Length: 403
Image (cartoon, rainbow, N blue to C red; front, side, top):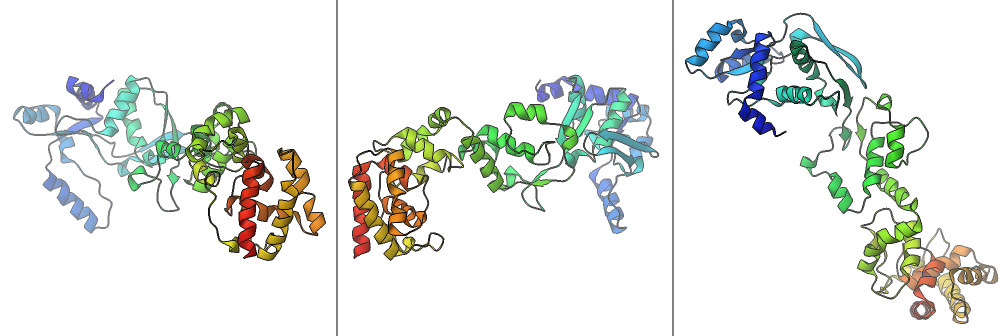
């Protein structure tokens, strides 16, 4: 349906008038000055504002006469002055409120348009909605919705109020504040399924000890009883981790097909795309970061030789030069350039040089890529670059270190 067409047809006004006949609403002719005066007086007393509408004492005949005379009006909900109203929520349990704390909200505005709080009840009923899932900010409005349902003698839907997704401890995630939308995240290289997987974990705890779910698995595992009552903070790094796990869980054929456009964006040379995809799969966490990770294939960059100083790998330019010279001599005679053969050749060097594996492989990777961080290690990248290009880059780096 189109809500504006329902407004033009008078549907909401018809239900509002029926609600008046049932005692659940009343006409109000009060001007803004009276409402403002009440607000000012109550706030001066330190009270929360709640409009005390004198018009609810008018008879329907008096109201119809004033309408006939051309007076502007709104239709307000009539709230019982005493007693309580309760509702059951699947997340928060039974919630009971005192009726005298509920404000008599406007249902139909002076221009004939319904407010959201009225239209949503009418629309949900007409659509036969049985389950209402929405944010917990609507908890305070739900008692008033139930009073409308009860006045019409309609079935009340099952309520599931979810806690908000928080940007931090104090503010909700909001696109209005520039926070990323679902479409923004997809454009940044996140998989739709991974986004849904992560969002499902915000405020919901699975019964089993796992975090990665396909959509079908989520459908089977999800239970509203495990939704929490407090907001969960959106963690971009955790989303990135979930996305990376989704990428790693793909079979290589599907992954290669998915990432080839991103590889082609950065790599124009005749390098084996499947091999590149294989090293990316274990390291790339989003699709959008792939091109920048691969720039070294076509363009061997100049780099600072201070990068050879690495405490973790126990390397410095002197150690690097010695290991690179040994790697060059071993590789220039290498006939079989497969990854397996390179693995055998290069891992034989540390023992000969009385070095650790990292003191050979870390300088080699840096010497042939010019980058501190790369997808894939020295052996994998050497295999993809090929013998000629690997030796060319290795020779350039050695000459620079010898100076």
